[in-house]
Amino acid sequence: MRISPLRLLSASMIICAMSTQTLSAQEVRSPKDEAAMKLAKELTDAGTKMFAAGDGAGLAAQYLEDAEIVEKTVESVGPPTVKFHRGGDAIRKVYENVKDLTKFNLTNDVHYARFVTPDTLVISGDLLMSENAETKRLPFMQVRRKTGDSWKIVCLELSLSR
Image 1: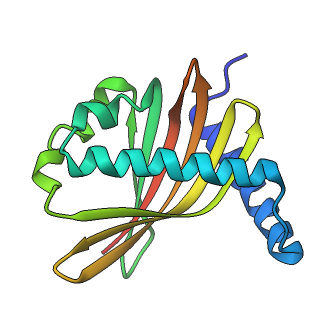
Image 2: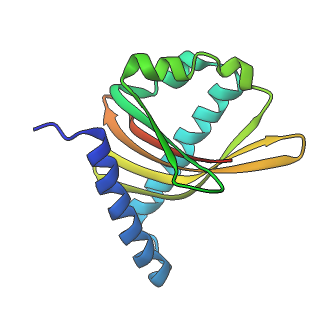
């Protein structure tokens, strides 16, 4: 039975929320949690380097072919707008014009990472997008699955605000 990326993301977000509460109460990380954080930082740093180089093809290649990107845009008034980019073609299209965005300096601030299973990693944090001494904080959540020697993105949820 194949689990949809959106269901996996929802389940991972619930696990993440429950685990974060427990962690903050105990303030203790296991070696497994430390390994997840280290891997999460390596993976997200590699993505920001590809972004800085304008490597849209490299960024899109980080995703499984049936992956999805969920963009949630929060307006000052009203409900959020949610946009889905599903599948390899849609994701490649998202990253087609990344060269036009290289004026921004990106860094990732990983707050949480955990192996949900030995081959499934959940990462959450903030994407910091800076330009001219102004920084926007964009919360994100990724679910990655190990395929061969790489960790491919199953689902990325990115929160934008206007």
